[in-house]
Image (spheres, helix red, strand yellow):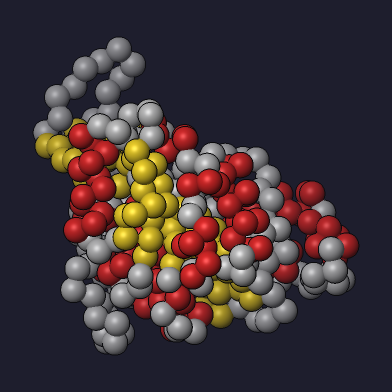
Length: 310
Ligand code: ADP
């Protein structure tokens, strides 16, 4: 069983020839609405690779919230722990320019009300892994990670979006980050001397050798996603391993990171090795880039034992 705790949004996307200037109003050439939010995307990806995926989140008490929840249920996500907040449904306003460049404004709404109490003890007791991302209050993530670890559940964090503040990773086993996020985490670790902190805790005595990124962050495992280049696996005390990239004609990479994280954790809870789970996640995420949209682009008929291609 996999728990995914974090955000669910309503994505409203408008296509425009140009971004509006301050004070300007433009008419979109096309638009669509879809369910999004990092954790909701990850839950859908996990369900599509065959995991029992439970989302823990706050939706709006409104029609938009009910809509989001029913679309997640249709995608195979368990939604028993998605409860209505007082605030409106979380929203993302996305503009996509003709050249594919985008801007995104997220309005957290009910996502800001998610607390550690939203995670039912009964679910924690039967979970193998819990996956967090950072579109909900950081205190909720930290408190829930500590609770999960105390219950014997492995903790994964997709370190996105990062705010520039240092992150406390003491209750995290596995971090998934893109290149920019990984660089930011490592620069904080170096400045804050996390190396000596983790040594002081006795978890990984001694200073990690240069290039042991997982150990430098006090983690068992760091996975860095590398866009079209696939990903790399960094396990503390071991040489990094490369996850094969998959060549596709990418048309829209939005939601690719969430596809990778959700599929990876989905397969880990199904008992795959890290290498196998990451290779499957890489194929799943590559397939998602060949269609427009975030979770709407995820392959519904994904074959686990597919060829090296998608
Ligand atoms: P993010 O979108 O979070 O910045 P990445 O760009 O690293 O994350 O993409 C996440 C994963 O999606 C990659 O590890 C890879 O598996 C897949 N992916 C992304 N872009 C492409 C691409 N152009 N071709 C093939 N796979 C891709």
